[in-house]
Length: 421
Image (cartoon, rainbow, N blue to C red; front, side):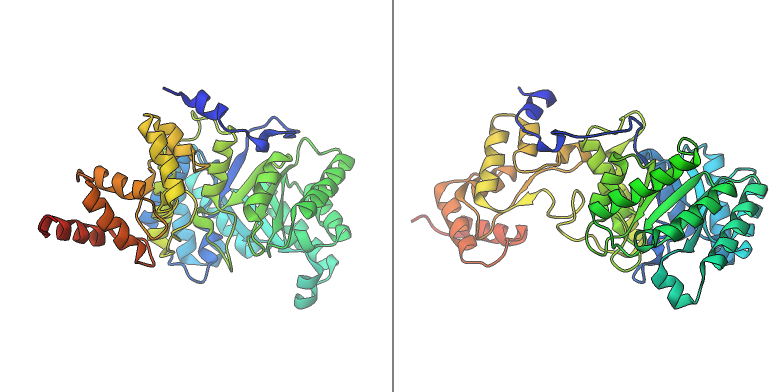
């Protein structure tokens, strides 16, 4: 029998060649599902009980920080944030809380009040638009941005809360503006900068250039060891997962994401895909991350927000480990025939289904071979005699889609009812 090491030896992994990891630190994650994710115009706002269940799952997954919401949005948001914070304290969860706020006192003071009532510090992520296109649309100038940044960060720090400074649309902002705002925020007490690809504009070269610029600024200020960097990305050009992965590989302290990739427009970085990929890269310690509930986490978010899971969505989608193609199915069947379930899991998939409570599924369709039919029948305890296999196989070749189980069983019943030739 092959063990895990033997199966890994059968995969030549180009992903690991010349892999540069300048920092030895473990990847850290900020879950934005119940804040930024709920800004999607298509979602339903979960109940407080449902949000609590999601936070518990995030904690099991080893996600480090959860954004509990934006209390400045109103009374309901404030009540939800306080209830979630009390639950984290009472249940002694490991996950740490943060809240979003505009760089205005009206948004920040509710966070301070909640923190003081519960007796737990809340990281405040204070955001302001920094790109010239936004400044032009809003009729803002840099002097105004500096004033809001300084006032907001000082209010947070003076009240003893961790202060993170968020520049919206960082990836389309001018370096002179970023230099001014970053220096202002750090001088006012910010210990973290959150670089945002708010409109999903960046490509890898843009991320690298922005990171090099920001690191140079921090190094020049002598605060490179004190001020951490976060990456917050959106998926408008389809690069969100790639950029978040690179950000963590290139030295960002934390990456943000949402379950199922939900969020405004086409959504945020998919948190479940981040966790999946860093698991497969061998970067997650199983003592800190219980990924056995990763599928449940995504399905619960889908159920509670009303966002459907696409059939081909990685790991969780209906078709993620399902094939009706003859060549693919034959390879899986041959691996299983050797008694090697892990080999069967990997021969036509980069993701080991059984690790996450899924399994390979062989279906029957117009691209199938006879092996598909034989396997399908045996899995259901039906003797695959030649006549029955031929009948199902020929029926499938005359269809234009994968057969449903009920459809195949109808053919089986008809065969059983037919007189012998």
